[in-house]
Image (cartoon, rainbow, N blue to C red; front, side):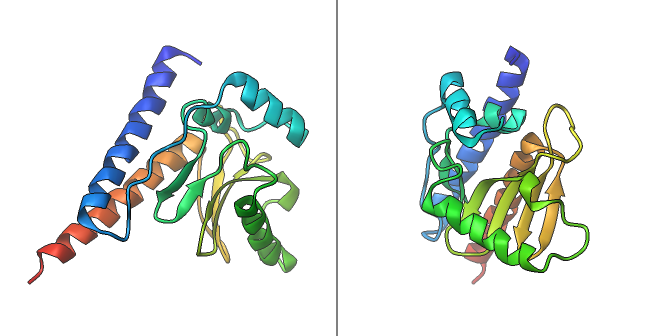
Length: 181
């Protein structure tokens, strides 16, 4: 990874961390959470070996900056390498996708091409990288499911940008509500 790419990831992660700090000061519904320590390339390689397939390149890059983040957006947690394919939260996401794919609506990608990367702890939100989707800037699409396909981002980097935008909007709404008499 180039230094320029590393700076882009660091800037996005820092922006989200700052927004999470602001949310904590505005509402007790969003207590401050912080990202977990970065994974090493050896950690990524060991997880890829355990899973029997490579991770999406951008997903792997992100995990070398933050190896998971509980409640990074509302109650949606970015899964760490240790969670992928085996934690209770991952199993919850897999179960939710299983319900959706029981009678899949047209247009969904093949279930076996999805890698769960983030899951809600109390809702039906699941985010998955579509390994069979078109590469954009070295990463595959990220799909947001919540009982249906909600939205697709071009790659993990763009998905993180969308999470930042959603967090900014949530913060703006909370501030506006706090200012009302």
